[in-house]
Image (cartoon, rainbow, N blue to C red; front, side):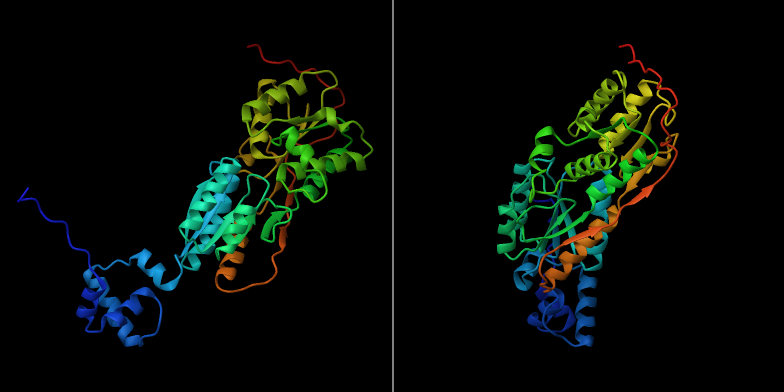
Length: 365
């Protein structure tokens, strides 16, 4: 309609140049962050841009500089507190280098991960941090071939010439379960989000390193070191599903010759385990001792407080971003695996073997 107000005109580089009294090429260099200009000229151009309300065209700037000042991050599940803390570590380091983080969620789906990586390649992000959801690294190799460095977070891929940031999952799990065996426990169960197929396929030498399967391997090693046979009957693969973990623990704890100790390989398995123990009115640690992997914020809010393997999650994310920034800026050392240490935190959820094993009964539905 004729009386409708016109939208305000976008302020352009020529506008800023005229206002600052400099040439367009000079204004473009200052606003684009490339080339050289005197301190006085730079100050005049930036002041003019601020007065006029000029905003940088990121697409144009990237065409000139070859940089988009963005990092792509692909994680398995952003609702998982572990990945939320890792992304915080990435974002903090990225911000110090003037980089913005663009986040994608794979839902532990390899196809979703590959689609996200391809989109980031097309958008020309300056670097990628990926927590791989499936084996294979051809899509990541394509990113590297396109000039986009890649760092793997939390999980390693065999045969991939990529920087990788992890913790010693196997050693940490072995040490945690050894605390049970040292206290005299022989009926020690593990509740894991790994599937049976993942468990068997990734135990082979040179296989991809998945966190939960590495923790299962550490569990097995601890039992063998203590001379405890037949650990397989007390392993429960529950998928990444809290309700499934709850059902598995209900079945374990109401059976004959039930376990007196439970080790959980991740927070989802831990929550399902605690759900089941509450339903059974199980006393921790008088009836059963519990150790969880990862120190969630709620681990000290429950009673008794939960003994855990604590990971330096934010530091993992920060280190991944730091490695990436250095590669973006031209560093080219040979890719390697960076392994950070975990910490065992003893709280009140662990104790000696019960003098008598109380029979636990499933709740009435």
